[in-house]
Image (cartoon, rainbow, N blue to C red):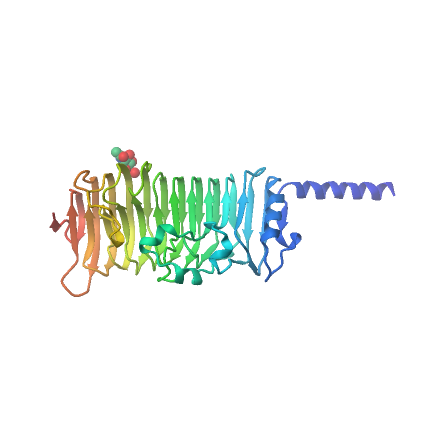
Length: 393
Ligand SMILES: *[C@@H]1O[C@H](CO)[C@@H](O)[C@H](O)[C@H]1NC(C)=O
């Protein structure tokens, strides 16, 4: 009897020891079932997990409906969000009650998001109503996954699909790794940016595969130290720094490295864009190298005269100063003649621009590829196809 009791006691203790650290919080234990709405179950599982260091919220294989949720920290310690199944957002924007996100991770340190699962934003209905263009800024449409003030964290092996708006948005994040993430949305879906990074630092994106109707990766103001390694983009609008200079008090962008990777059938390759008539700003230390372009319009582009839909009040030049930029070993095919375009501002010309080993072929009508340089005198070395700066202004 005494022996049995102590056995029970010791196994209980063992159980307690094994559950107090690294405990699993399966949404099923909170009433979350496949093919049903798991919003409440997920919130409860998250709340419980967040009070214990090293815990894991699990959504196992299956399809689940989920409303807009905020997964809020700070938590007791490291926490994992393990999505193996598919989450489906509501189709209608009205049910988001004006929220600009579907799933929001906020103020969390040491977060892991993983599991191979899918965030399906069900964007089809919202895209039809999003006439973008000038009205773009008046619309509040939900981003699929938002990371706000998330630090020392990793997001890997997840998929974001058919978001109503941006797919993944980082704001105020520091030391965040994104690995093996897949983003898919149709080429004609408006504003479905793959990954947008704003006011963040020490961000790495590795082996992502992003096909959308808008930017593959975009980098907004106040962002430092971003490395995008071996990212595959297309369709979409390519890898963009900017647009910068639209608002007052934008913070500098610096330390951007895009290394390796392939862009296919995108509207731009690697681009830095700033608005005309902008307040002063700084974008520096931006490097693009070893990149393959397949049938890309504007493979290499600095555009300081960015003004879609003629929405600029007047056309005075941009005051965002661009410096220390390199384009190295960029090869492949351009779908337009304008393979290289470096259009800088005439009040703050681009400085320290380096162009090395470019081989971009245009096979269409109207002659071979061109390279335009405006308000910039790049340092040119290695192979240059098209010949560098053949068009100057
Ligand atoms: C230019 O970029 C290089 C490479 O990232 C960096 O080491 C250097 O400090 C930068 N120079 C300036 C003046 O910002």
